[in-house]
Image: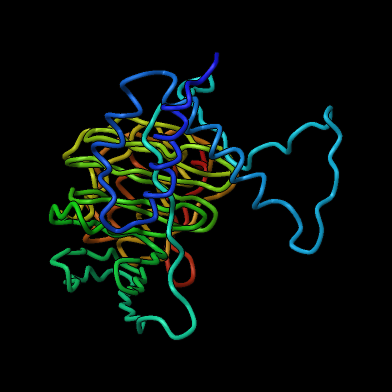
Length: 306
């Protein structure tokens, strides 16, 4: 498909403008969706820019025309198949370093929920055993948090969690980043999520989320009432491995709970209160017909002994 010069010029203008704080993202999205050639032209510029970034800084090395491009680090999956995400591009901004704004850090203890108010009016509910570092409009999260962001088109909040960056101009959403996995759930409005090696971000609207783990991004649907349900003292599980459910119960309740590997893959669904981690573990054990045995400092779920 041949791209007219006018469309190429418009794409170049949007490409340059995206780094500007006054970038009009809704108009950009409308422009992308107005004509398939718009997205093609913009994607071409993104590919050119990515190729330039990947070149060595000291010399330009020739690349054979038949060389295969490296596989992207992340892939999108919905159900069993890959999806092409036709979404508005939003570039992640890394937290400033050097002599930039001073970072402010907040830490919550196991079993403690903490409220944080940012200078721009954003309110953050920090989950137990989590850490939030704020530098201007950029946030680095380890653990989980629920964000309530006021709508300000000229000011975007960026949440960095693991390898992902979540950008938002005004909505309510949860981000959970533990070990090698990151999960995002949207209760209201929409957010844009970027990942290394992915040409376009994923745009998530209310009732949708994603889980990123092991190099794969899986899209999910969810009840908006279940987003950050730990704020109401409960966790909602829908057909998840027992080991994952117990990991979350242990983390959010502050109790020490472990699972025998032989039953770690057993599936679990249910709503569990987390004000008492020991009781939560025993409730799960009763539902799944396994044993909850006291061990040094906590509880361990094991296969039921007959």
